[in-house]
Length: 194
Ligand SMILES: [Zn+2]
Image (cartoon, rainbow, N blue to C red; front, top):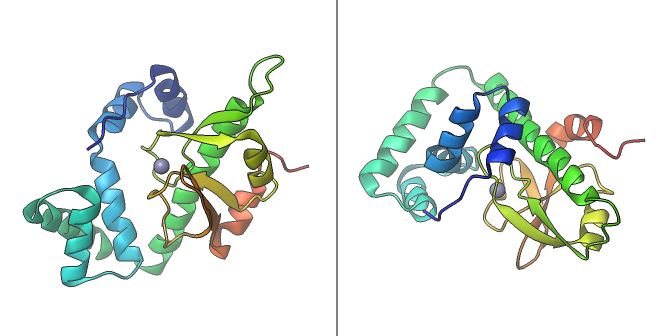
């Protein structure tokens, strides 16, 4: 696990937006447990099963086989519940996270008075609510990105193939485009919408 120091201001802001206790947000951000569950979720959605699923979970989360099996079992339990409808609402819920980080980045990118930064330090816009890692992006690139309401900037490795396609791959970030099922949702929440 790489250390992911929590910015208290950001944690407080997220807590308000997600209607969660600030302490809980900070704790979750530090633990990284939800990130692992998220990775398993993604792999299952993408159609991986059995041995292949187990291998990928271990590769991507760095846990041992026993822990990986436990994560997969926990996810399987969830799956025995409601089917299609749950999957659809999951996509919507995850898109909400990306919308949230897009709003935050719009605030960060607008900067202070007289700011004309070439490089912006923004928050990863991936669908993992607990990811608040920073990414560097050129201001011009960011402007271009925001012209398309279906596109988001995420860190390499944070793309979610079940929910979005990679349209551009850069060394420091990846541009993803949401699948059609959440287009209405992300477009309606577009902060640049006239
Ligand atoms: Zn991320």
